Length: 481
Image (tube, rainbow, N blue to C red):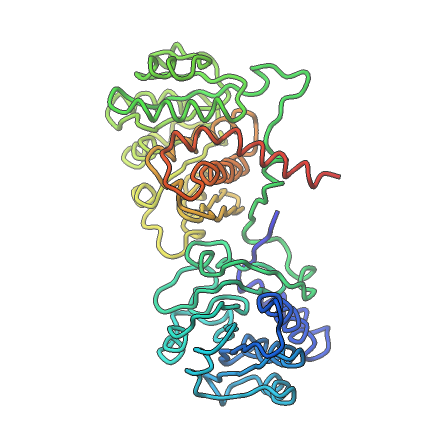
């Protein structure tokens, strides 16, 4: 699992580390890692290549200047553009000049002619968009950009961009990953993120955010053993669909069937379409005839009228794990008394998009992690907040983020597939927080496999679920001892 730490925790850890290492050693170690990545980006051949440093005040500017000194010693032509000349890092500036680097406060030509631009404009303490002078220079960039810790102008703890900001080809981050590297616009603008070890690890403590790697998901995905049968693998109940929207039921039940469930039971008005597409599903028209299940998926296409409310009431009173999506979330938002029907401590995952979330817990705002945690604690549920970076928050404060590599899976019916995956993992007994995180990762991978660079319908995404699980299991096997 990959850990992510907020800037407050990073600064505290850095201060503890700085107190016990020689002055300047940490910056030179970070700068050497930055220069190493820059050299790889300049290859083949580095002698005579042109690198322009955009240097602001503070340590990120110092990192860029020291990296420029290392690059200059390798024969690279380095020009530092000082955006705050009176506050440039003095030791880094002296090192660059000693190595033969050029320093200027007028950077238009240097930016236009660069083979690589290193963005050291602002650091983790900065907030808000680029100032006009920096934004003007950034607009001129045509070369690849290597960002120091973060693309300048991106909010470090939320990944939000509220104005002019750098879009990096790659980012070098020191000691640990920060929230912007995995959240929203920040993840897209960071490009490929390279982590440089500066010895910060022992000072960090538990991460604020966790990102599941493919091998983690593959290792956690339930696999039947020799003594398992259809019941011990988990029976998933699906209450979804309507005469108007039978497809939602077909997609949710199909995802549960393909994921891991030893058995899927369906209840609702889409029983005939379910039987036609998934003959292995036990489909009935009434929840009273469904039989025993270990987890329920409820809501997709179900409707928000009295009938839907009655079904949700019966599901919540059943005392088993629940994944509530779509219309079930709307019902919970509109009828607060429904929350009282749930037995305390019963596992529950809700999967809202931003508009559903607003009805349930107020506007999401810029800080998606804080919003998801707020709702998780208020309702004592795991919240999977959908978006380009999916946030999964547990009421005990744990947070998972699944940064999507594309947006092809953002299509009608895609959420129904996700709910079915979550339900199957809940039925198999997986921790609800991990069930939601693993399902999100498999869902995103299935979408990527199905799309192959082109738009896809949800049915195509569904068909790739088994392949996605195979890929994840293979990743786990490749790192097993």
